[in-house]
Length: 108
Image (cartoon, rainbow, N blue to C red; front, side, top):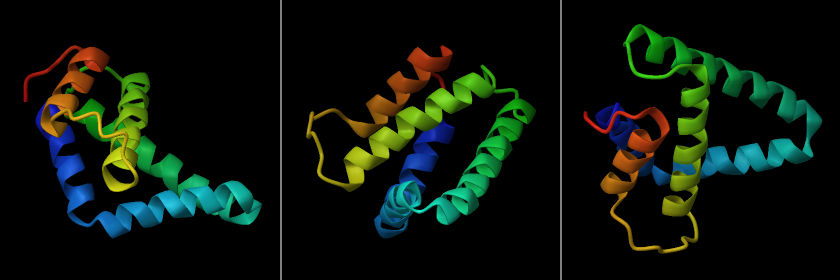
């Protein structure tokens, strides 16, 4: 689980412009109802796919834990790819601790 989230963070920070664009699109969707409807559907399908993958892979937790991980990783990515709080913590350790504290499995 930890390795899976580390891979997600690595992939999304490797092309930071794409992830920043998604954040910007989500902010714009908050202002435009037609975009909110379209983007919301895409995001909900992605979340449902993530839950299905999580369950099929036998990873700990369920839909709620996947949502918690989304919320936590989105915040981490926002900090890594925009103006940071610059807390000075190692990203790999942060990911490991997020998994450990949210689903109780810090091993890869």
